[in-house]
Image 1 (cartoon, one colour):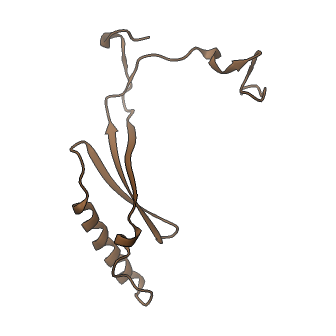
Image 2 (cartoon, helix red, strand yellow; image 1 turned 90 degrees about the horizontal axis):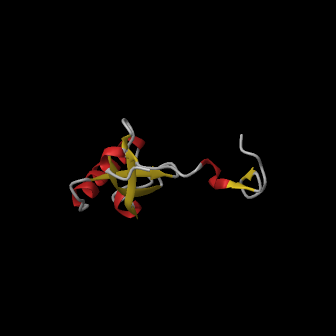
Image 3 (cartoon, rainbow, N blue to C red; image 1 turned 120 degrees about the vertical axis):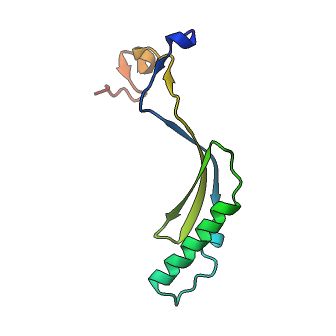
Length: 112
């Protein structure tokens, strides 16, 4: 167990990403899109809308905005994430933490 910063082990190449906010932005993303549009025009309008959503979304200096399509582009979600690049190992639970009556797991199934 790392009781001081000197005892912590840096986890090089490891990052941790936390979602601080998730919001359905489908109505904004599909604004100005109609059923009669061609695929190229539809995607162009959606791209313009997503760019505007990014501009209008307030975020902290260490936060990132990601907007992802779901259900073949019929629904859009905005994710506000925070990435931590200084990840350190400070301790680990004992190997037997999940062991009950000599077996792993609650169903008595042995671990591989």
